[in-house]
Each structure stands twice: as structure tokens, then as C-alpha cells.
Image 1 (spheres, one colour):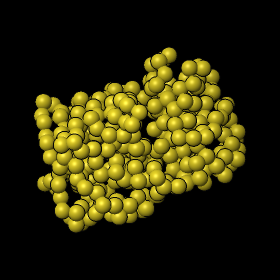
Image 2 (spheres, rainbow, N blue to C red):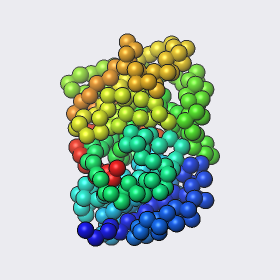
Image 3 (cartoon, rainbow, N blue to C red):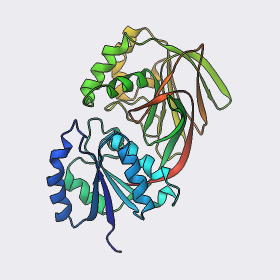
Image 4 (cartoon, rainbow, N blue to C red):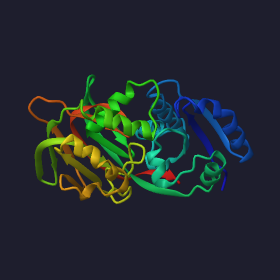
Length: 308
């Protein structure tokens, strides 16, 4: 079999801007490992979507992203935005180098350049489900794919705060932000519709997951399995804010669903989230702030070919 030619999308701003200085070392590792490739560097938010879409349209079928969860999110959206070929005909690999690396955490993808490149070269693949959401933004109705977890309510509130920062927070910083902004956040009434059920309540968070990790190692959808054809849905009803802090350990231990105010299940979808009483329920996906409800979520079964 002829060695593949890789189209590499490199985000120099990943890892709080530290990845840019690592390109010479990565380039040396690529040459030593015998890779054939071309590289494109991202220059602005959303650029990786455009680069990935154009790469597939130009005939590239092996795409590698170098960056964090945001880069991962954008490249996958670029693969799915184009309509020339079925997305699962594209071999997609991530070389993780970000602050969260939640998607990479599930697949145990190494951040060591040499180790990860050696594994990618074996072209061992797995087909993964993908999430899709239609939502509202200031520019009107939008659509986006997500490869990991979408969050609404407080999760999206934090994502919006993160977007306003100069640098992406690491896992510890993110946890501190969760605690810091908790007492500023006001719960919003919303409606969740799925499987002919309708739930109206005040929600701290609503999470729809493909994979289980988000927020720097949190497991808000511990029941998520990335290739079972199901959306994992978790929602937390109103709790005293002091209890949210007390229960923080559950975010990381996978025991969050043991709490009586937190519900977790799996559904083939669709899932709809609607705002109530003229309020706003915010939305993020893969840590990227997107917009707000009304939103509808669906699943694309085994739509992404991942090089693990």
C-alpha cells in the first residue's frame, strides 16, 4: 500500500500559544518518520473549518489536525461541511496539543510527537458517531457538528466567559472558573423534549455527549459511548449553589448520575431544548461557544473515520 499523503492543519495558538514554537521539532519528527505531507497554519478562529473543507474538495483524504479541542472541532466541521465525498472516506487524525484535550483523553492519544506519529502511521481506525445541532445565533439560524460534548445553560455560560479570555484556561483554571462564576449565574427555565417526553424545569446544565469527557477531564456524560448510535443526555435540575461545589468531585469520578437531582440517559434523538418565559439558554459545543436555544440535536451514526 502506498504511503498516504497527509494534509496537516496546524494551530500555532494552541496550548496557550506555545505550540507555535514546537513546529520545528514536529517538522523534524515528521521527516524522521518518513511522512509525506503539506501543512497549513491557522490564522484566526474558524480558519481550520475552511482549510479542512478546501483540503477535501481538492482531493485530500488524509487530514491531521495539530492542536486542542477547538482545532479538533473545527477540522471535523470542515470535513463534514463539504459535499464532495462521504465524510467517513476521509482518514482523520489528531495530534493533541491543547489545554483540555478531552476528546484525545478518551482515545488515549499521546501528546508526544514521536509516539503519536508512530501510532498514526499504522492507520488503525475506528468509526465514531457525530453530533449535529441546529441553533440560534446573532446572525440567525446556524448548524454545527460536534465530536465530543455539547453543553447548555451554565456550561455554555462558562464557555462564553472563556472566549473572552486572552488564553484558554487549563483544567485547574477551568475548575476555578466554574466555582468563581457559579454565584453570578442565574438558572434559566427551559424545556427538554426527547423520546416523546417533555421536561420543563430550571436547569444548571444540559449536556449532550458523544464521548464522555469535557471541561478538562470532567465526566458530565459518563454514559456516553462514541459508536453506539446514541446521544448521551445529562441534565441537572435546580440545586443549592453550595451543593454544586460540594458535589464537584462527582464531575471527575463518573458518579454524577448517582445524585437524585441529576438525570442521565441515552437516546437516538432528536433532542430539543427550548427556552421558556422569554429567557435565554446558551449553547456551546466541544468547548466552543456557539449561541443559544431553541436547539435541536441529532446523531450521525459512525460518520467519522478516526485514526487512533
